[in-house]
Structure formats: C-alpha cells, structure tokens
Length: 293
Image (cartoon, rainbow, N blue to C red; front, side, top):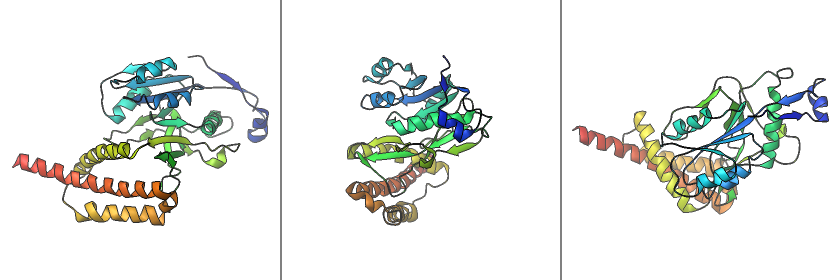
C-alpha cells in the first residue's frame, strides 16, 4: 500500500507547536463483514472512499453485495461463518494499514467524522502527544429513519478506530466488543473544528419488521450467554420486572419520550427483547434438563 503524505494545515502550527509543518504519513484500512447487505453496502463504502484500503469478509451473500463491493474497489474475501467476533477478527487480520476502522455494513461515516478521524490520527505524532492506541467514536442510531437522540441511545460511543496490532474483538455470541492493548481516547463533538458533528451513522432498523427480526435473533444469542452465566432459571424478576424497569428508566428518566412515536415504539419493543432473552434462557435450560433426565 502506498503511504499517503498530507501536509498539515497552517492552523495546526498554532494548535500543536513549532514542528507542525512536517509531513504526516499514515494509512487507514476499513474492515467490514457482510452477508446479503445489498441494501446497505454501497452507502457504507461511498462514505469511506477516502480510506486507503477496504477489506470485506463475506459469509456467502446471495445478492449483489460482493459485486457492489468489488465495483467500489473493496478487497472481498468469502469465508464460512465463524461467529461475529471471529469473522470481524478475520477481516482485521487482512488489513495492512497503520490504523484500522471497523464498521458494520449498515453504518455510514459522516463527513464530519471523516474529517475528525484524519485530525484524530494526527495525534499519532509522538512529538506532540502521548500516543493512544484506540479511539471511541460517537454513533447516531436511526430507527424507522428517525434519529434517536434520547433514552441513552446518543451518543452511543463505540471503540472502532485503533492501531494495527493493538485491537481484537472479544469472543461473544452477540454485542462483541474490541479489546485494545494500549491507551484509548474518546472523540467528542468539541474535539472537531467546524460545525459538522463527527458521528458514525447507524442505519439500524428501517422497518419494524427488521427490528423484530433482529431482536428475535439477538435475544436467542443473548439467552445462550445468560445460560452460560447461570441465569437460566424461570425468574419473574428477569422476565417481567427487569424489562418494565428498563422501559421506565430509559423512556421517562432518560427522556426517551422526547423522541416521539419512534421513541415509544423503540423502548417498548426493547423491553420486550429483554423479556424474550430471559424467557428463552429458561427454555434452553429446561430443554437441557429434560434431555439429561
């Protein structure tokens, strides 16, 4: 991969010190996993065309996902499904850039975030800063095409940008997270010069059907994790009280009601997801007990 050298702007001198006119040479790889993401992948890849390299690990798409990705210059690898964490780690291992940005196929890098990432990577200049290995990015979640601003959904910070060789996804059935070997920092709105907010835009659930489908799948995976933690008993607390308390806390105390009808539906169905998870955990435990008996 060719190193791309960028001349730091004049205002960088005033902000960071007398050596600010040196050339900054760093490359960025983007890592994405896909399966049947034809509806999303073009938007995602268009938002990172400024990156040096895009790596896609596909798990057997039957639509035009791989065709669109190759058309937009991505390097596509087709592999059997190994689980979320293992699949994402496979994509990371194939990246050759100095830094790696891990994205989901339904996420989009906003223009403000593009600018902020470039500015943030300048902090890799050790003459000016204590080096950091990872950067948390603010994420804007869309539900039924509506930006969910309240109820704990914004800013939904995710650690997605990290130096090559320092980060891997921790093994988990669902809600996998990156473990970083080194210091991490947080990209906040006040760290951006300009008016555009540096958000990762998550086109999460364009329809109610897609939300219910995802929550059904996630609750099944979450149930398996709950069983592994010994939470497989039939519990009124987990199946009834916890979901209700979650709704009250997020919808009222964290102002979820300010997101209107979309906010009501999101928080209502999210508490149903919590109930499903623990009910399915009980079902799994009961099935295993019956099989053993």
